[in-house]
Structures are given as structure tokens and as C-alpha cells.
Image (cartoon, rainbow, N blue to C red; front, top):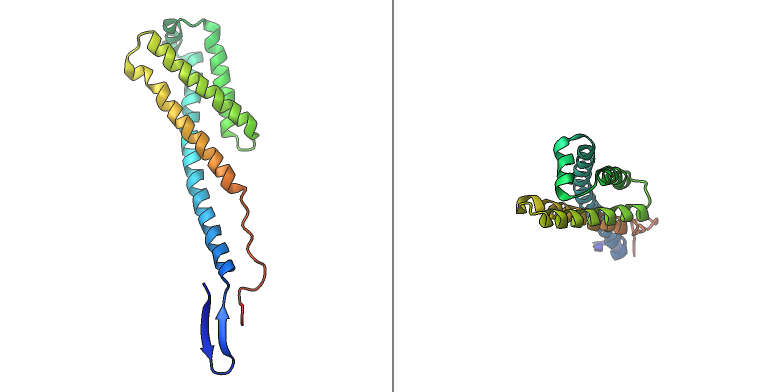
Length: 170
């Protein structure tokens, strides 16, 4: 946008440049998109983290969850390994300064865990309501992963605002 007006003493005067306004609009769009992506990412990651920490705690202390591993045919040591891996993976996702490659490894590990849990529950004859839960959490994991990448991509885009005066007179 260029705002121009006529002055009797100086003639035509104009304010602003199209590049400046385009830069301001792009910066505001970037901020709005970052906020949306950040909210979706942290909501999905928070739900996922809470569920993973609860299940890791349950594997180690709740008798019904221990009996579930016996029902599925897994050895007792696997329950402890899985609880430890879930705890470490949750920390990797929730701590912001962990490198992206480690977070990606946690996402892959959780995806394999959810798919394996679905297969184990289906194979052991559990009802659909039990077998479908790992797939629901796989969907939440995918939302967290997708919005993590979107948030990172937008965060690294730079928009330079001109340092010159915003007043441009012709």
C-alpha cells in the first residue's frame, strides 16, 4: 500500500512502500502461524507424554498392567525394558533443547510401540475397544510429529524488516 495525497505547497506526497507493508503482513502471518502450530504441537505432545509416563509407571507398579503382559505372552523383563524406553522417549520429546534427531528417534520408537501393541492386542483376542487405543495414540503421535516439523520450519524462516524510515516522500 502506498498512501499519497496532494499538498499545495509541495505537490504530491506519498507514505510507505509496498515492500514495507508486505514485510509487515508476512511477519504477522508468520507469528500467527507459529502460535497455532506451537499450541497444536504442545497439546498433542503433552497428551502423548502424559499417557506414556502413566503407562511406564503402570508397567512397574500396577498389578493389572503386569498381568496384561502375561496375558499378551510377553516375558517379565520386556515390561521393564518398555517402561524404561517410554520414560526416556517421553523426556526426549518434552525437553525443548533435545536435538531433533533424538526426538525423531523417539517418534519412531513410539510408532513401533503403538503398532506392535495393536498387533499384540488383536492377536490375543482382546476386544476392539482395547485394540484400537494404540492406534488412537498413534494418531496423536502423528499430529505431534507433523506440527513439530511445521513449527520448526516456520521458526527458521527469516523475514527482514527494512531498517530505513517508513516515510517515503516522492
